Image (cartoon, rainbow, N blue to C red; front, side, top):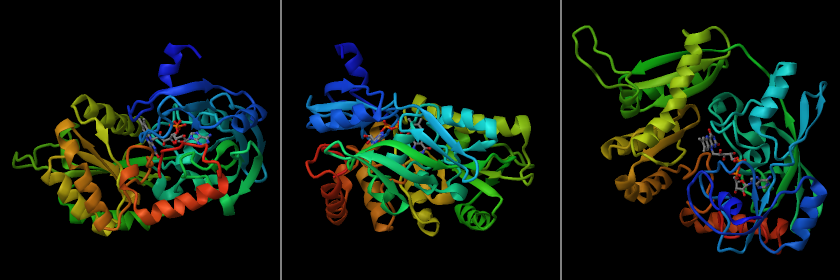
Length: 381
Ligand SMILES: Cc1cc2nc3c(=O)[nH]c(=O)nc-3n(C[C@H](O)[C@H](O)[C@H](O)COP(=O)(O)OP(=O)(O)OC[C@H]3O[C@@H](n4cnc5c(N)ncnc54)[C@H](O)[C@@H]3O)c2cc1C
């Protein structure tokens, strides 16, 4: 591949930079198998939207395996409500096709316009509707993977965890059978809450309501940046958190145009914070009942945050000067028995924070599935 094109493959959405030996773009599973069998070090890549450097090649020795041309949307099984897709299919393209049947793949990460099904399975992506639909792996019936020798295997639900959420260190996902859900009529509400204890109480209640499909939190700083603070009757402007609650019926106050405008506002948060210099995004996950401690810590350090509070995932955004606080945040998350990454993965970025015991478990899985250590060397473990 020519040098200019090669550059595109030397980074992902994390902005970490690496160097590739070369890039190959196979069009068939057979080509993938042949490439893997002949190569020494391989970095699988889907849409390149990963935020942890998972598909960034290292030291000019990694061959990038771009899977985007495995993009066939295969047979739809009406009776089982499943569909077979190539790993390179982009989520939005699949959704557009499924509209024909009034169905959808219900896990929708915010990167849906570019992320591929293979990348979503490899990172076990979580969407904003996780409170109802969970993670990508909850909606996968089987995957086909290519192992380090170039052999093809089909793995069902019981072995899925060797590949989903493993960030491509155990094999190349080439095809999957996905479960589908009917498209629902949806409404939403934006609720202002002044103190965080009240936020926790409301979220607990919402989690018991089966019509709720999304509970998103906007921290006070983010609420203010979005212009959501309004004076009360006395003219006083009080800071507050906001909850975006989506329902799969008519329970929400906002429908149609107002519903769409609410989510347009929600989608502006990332670009707004990046534009304000808060470019480093983190994704700790914590139990709801312990989240007050994390929220207090963000507020003490002036770190704006939002997140999928329905499943305990927070998105603090750090500016350049605040990045020095990230190890302290990770220490706090571990002390509170949380996870250092709720959805973006470990990749290169958070590798140094993985506990020794977890490394051992992951190494054992990798030894079993990739004995020659070909895939994503230097990532996760
Ligand atoms: C604006 C933005 C919003 C985002 N929002 C969310 C969100 O809401 N929820 C969420 O969970 N994530 C989110 N992400 C992170 C990212 O989009 C997801 O992790 C997504 O699943 C990655 O898919 P991808 O195809 O881009 O994978 P890539 O970035 O190409 O790869 C990610 C990892 O998976 C491996 N991989 C990719 N394809 C394969 C394959 N076929 N076989 C084996 N390994 C493979 C790579 O080696 C790498 O380690 C967001 C990212 C951005 C930039």
